[in-house]
Length: 312
Length: 135
Image 1 (cartoon, one colour):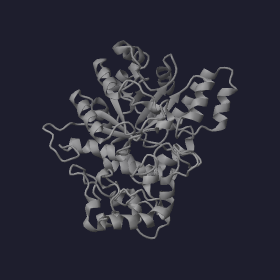
Image 2 (image 1 turned 90 degrees about the horizontal axis):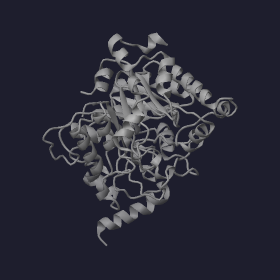
Image 3 (image 1 turned 60 degrees about the vertical axis):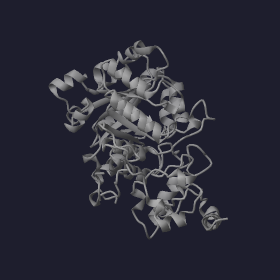
Image 4 (image 1 turned 90 degrees about the vertical axis):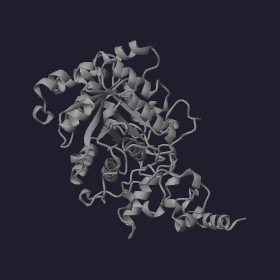
């Protein structure tokens, strides 16, 4: 059982973070990326060609993370692989002890720098979760038996900030039905939409079945904010938020303030099991934000215990 | 031309203009508010992706309203098949492409998911969205 699974089962607060993409540099590059945030994070997401840009594969990076002594969450998207390839990667992950899996449908190829690529989507996000469940149940999708069935902590993503807003919690329910046990929520710059989503999830009793982990993005420049606002599919940034950064004397600290405000708000929502951080800063942005939020480092949380609802 | 091919042609002649039918051969229109999910550029069978734009339009085709947004709205208005949109639909059987979904419905061929597919069906009543959770 992974540490993340144990913590979620014990309802302990979790911190996950996205490992920046790896484009060469080997294990030293992974170690370099981990250094500023490692102390605070329970598990690191190894992304799968984010925004349809090719990088080191999530399986390779997830194995690298284990070798670096930390726990990975392997993201798997449906855009680039058919069901055979997905089954193979899941079995490969299990072989290397990668248990935390985050299943995504994936951005379309047009979001990337090779838009002429053939999009696959042989299965969709909810189907990918069920596919992984079938491996856990001891057989491939065809029904062919697996000698030693793998064990996963299956998760998925959901976007509280994309229409149809009133359907998003029901889609989360569908993912729970398929076998997901945690949901890393897409970055959401509209707090009211996160509130609405979390309330709807609580109303249908989902908070009992799924650990909800909202994502907080730490940007550092006007350009970064504009990129997220205009180029990242499914993220809607209010004009006033973009203006705040544009008009700030110090764009980097304004970006940090925005991240702090959104994180504080997310922590106050009932049903939130932890936070997922995505940082585009070169320094220890995640460590700094955790400290400001009163979230102690991992070892301290494990020793002394920590409950976000008390601290915020 | 075989009888099956004649039926497939007739089916496409009707469902093509009305629903933009792509002849996947395993029609799920009843559970998607009579909106064909195969018109989603990602051919998603289980709801909208996270890329839907704030104006409700498609991530891939900005000029088009999200297929699943329409499916959701229409399913809410349909007097029948209520809640079926919350079903977990199995992966598309690509070997059925181009065949008649009517014939496949008649023979039951369209309801044969892969043998290893977990038999999860509809959300349990307590979930308010729609009985069996464990595969």
